[in-house]
Length: 151
Image (cartoon, rainbow, N blue to C red; front, side):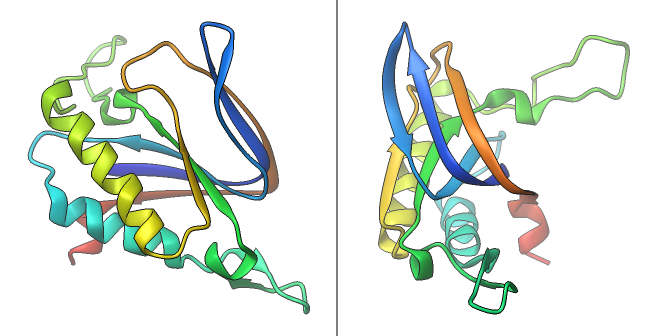
């Protein structure tokens, strides 16, 4: 399971001209579910992201986690994070989990964020053509792969 986390001042997702999720201070999380991913990996990744200390404290040091700042998360399913670009110029998405596997893991991941003290978790629409807007704060952008967390 892969995630791109962006610390944001605000973010929103629109589907068919309708805002389906929006947050103020927090994380925009692009989440890619790969073949072989399971609930254990989703929980591990959610725990790690909820505890990331990348918000600034009173001394302007990145020392606070999402719950410490009463931040929210906007989670967007994104199978293109699973792209294999090693051959040719057209990415292969064969590593991405099938929707019937990926969507329940996406939902499970979002629930685990809430259980880890994240104030509010908004979502995109799984499998939809989404328009995502954000104001990146910092910018702070972090790439995490659940497979790296197992080491």
